[in-house]
Each structure stands twice: as C-alpha cells, then as structure tokens.
Length: 411
Ligand code: NIG
Ligand code: FE
Image (cartoon, rainbow, N blue to C red; front, top):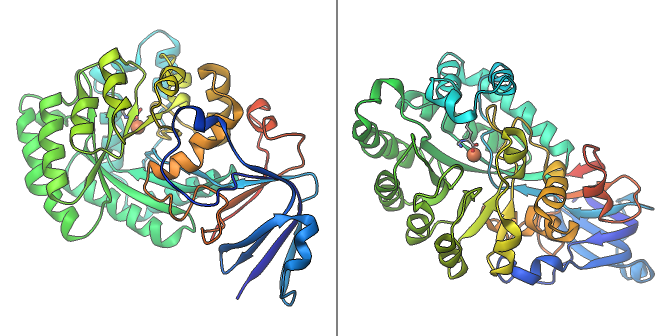
C-alpha cells in the first residue's frame, strides 16, 4: 500500500468534514483553511489530516513517502465540469476573422464554427483523436485539474458521435483523471439536415441514443439551445428521450439569447445549466428554487468578447454556482482552471474564496462526483494540488496567467 505524508503545509485548503449539498449564496465565501498542517494519503485516499503538532498521532511510519510543503498550499484538484476536450483541430483562422470584425455567430452561420470542427473530425482516426485528447488532459492536469467532464458534439453523424464517445470511454480507462462523458449530438444541425431539422432530432433520438445506451457510452445528455441552433421544443424532446435512456441533462443555454431553455432543463432535473451569459428575472427565479447548478464559463466570455454570466447576482439569489473552462477549439481554446479563477475574480467580482469553491466542490457537484472529490475530506480520493510557495490562497487568482501548481497528485 502506497502511503504519502505531506508535511509543513502552509495552508490546507477546502477541509470539509462531510458533504451536504452544493454551496449556495454566502456559503461560497467560506472555506476552511488549516494552517501549518499535514495530510496523509493511503492507497490514493485521504486518510488523515491535522495541525503539524498532532503529527505524532500517525501510527505507522514505515514505507512512508514524505513531501515537505513548507510555504506551499494544498488544495483539492479542480473539477472542470464542462469541456469539449475531444476535437480534431484548432480554429485560429476564425480567431483572426473575429479580430477583423466578424462575430462568432456570423462565423457559425457561414458554416464555420461547430460545422468546421465536425468536418475535420470526420476525417481523423479514433486513435489520433484519443492521443490528442490525452495530451490535452495532461496539460490540464499540470494546471491543477483532477476531474473533467467531456462532451461529444463535433461528430453530428451517428458514426462520428459514437467515435467521439468511444474515445472518451478510452480516456476514462487510460487517464488518471476522473472523467464523465456527455452526449452532445444536438450541438448544431449538420448541413444535410439544414432544411430538415426534425429529421436530425429524430436521428439523435432513434439512432444515436440506442447505440449509446447499449454500449454505455455516456453519463449525461446535452443540447445547445440557442437561436440558429436547437429550439426550446427540440430541447424538450431530446431531454425527454435522454432521460428515458437514463441520461440526466447538462445543457448549453442562454449563451446569446433567452429562449426559456433554463426552465426546460430544470423541469427535466438537469444536473447543471451552463453558459448563462444572458439571463432574465424569470431565469433567476427558476434557478433559485431548483437544485440545478448554474455553471458559468468565464474563459468563453473572455475569448469571444461577450458578456460574463451575472454570477454575483446569482449568488445574491442563493443559486448554487460552479465555474468551468468550456475547453474547445472555437470559443475557449484553454483548459486552464487557474485562469478561470482569475477571470471570475477580475471580471465577475467573485472573491478568490468563492472562485476556489466554485471550481472544486461545486464543480464536483456539477458532475455528481462530490462524494469522492472536490474537498479535503477523509475517505475521498486524494486528487490534490500542491502549489509553489505563495503568500496566500488569494495569490493564485491574483497572479493571472501564471501556473502556481507545482504538482497535481492524481489517484
Ligand atoms: O460551449 N456554444 C456551444 N458550444 C461550444 C463552442 C463550440 C465551438 O465553437 O466549437 C461552447 O462555447
Ligand atoms: Fe460548451
């Protein structure tokens, strides 16, 4: 049995005796930090922690790997609950088009965007997609990520959607990170279904979903509900079929317009509703009463130059919020959760404490893994970040663009 002792920790962040529910409102701004602490790990699980002067309480010192964390912080690894990590190619040509004045929506309408990514993915082998995604996961881990949700959605045909989901299944087995898979066949209408949208919805429901269920390829179902993409009625139909197939919703809503997708998601017991750059009072009222987690994606707003989700207002209304990267080649070419922490503070006016909670424990709730990850709790997986020496926890969000993670331990 592998035993590790981390000693002299300047601040052990995110200590939680036991989980109850995702943090809401004022709870987000509280985090337990044990100063001058130790943390013991046995067989990949947190077995013990406490102040350094109680270290003598460790019974068995044989075969113990010791890490000295003098001046360093230890925190739960980030849980990135919204990504599109499996894709074929980058899209910096569209980035240049946007610099010259085109909007993201205009590029999409011209057949760029998601359709551009789908055309490239159709020609790439499953093995190559797997290798590339695995390398991206390694990079994300180096920035402190310990769990990742990954969506399909750049296939848009039965064969290609299944190809992506099989890649995610292989990633689950090959990567040390904890991974959840989401089926996002309803990401855009493929060109051949432009005049027959219902035909594509039928294909998702009647052809793709049965294979996904049979091969156990997904944990969740997602739909991009937006003008020029999937309508609220189509969202409703797809979520109904998904739930019948055992897939709970985690959905893309309110990125550019308010169409009522949040209410439909909550009606279908969505685990999370994500994006939320555009929100009206009715959306806030619905989320206030729900257990659905509102997931904001500040790096997407940063990269596209669109509004940031009104997270401060959601917190004032006691809504549970999480923050994720949205890592994808079109709207967010970054899987860096430390940058998400910085943007949340700088642009959304979250405190550094709120940002850490929203990227750790609440991220874990947004992918239903809070019983095993997201906090420093005895019995949980010891997926943790050991930082470089730093003066305070707030320094992590403050020093934007830097990587303060010295190592991310993953079990
Ligand atoms: O979450 N908005 C929908 N889907 C992705 C971006 C897709 C793309 O541009 O490739 C998102 O931002
Ligand atoms: Fe997304």
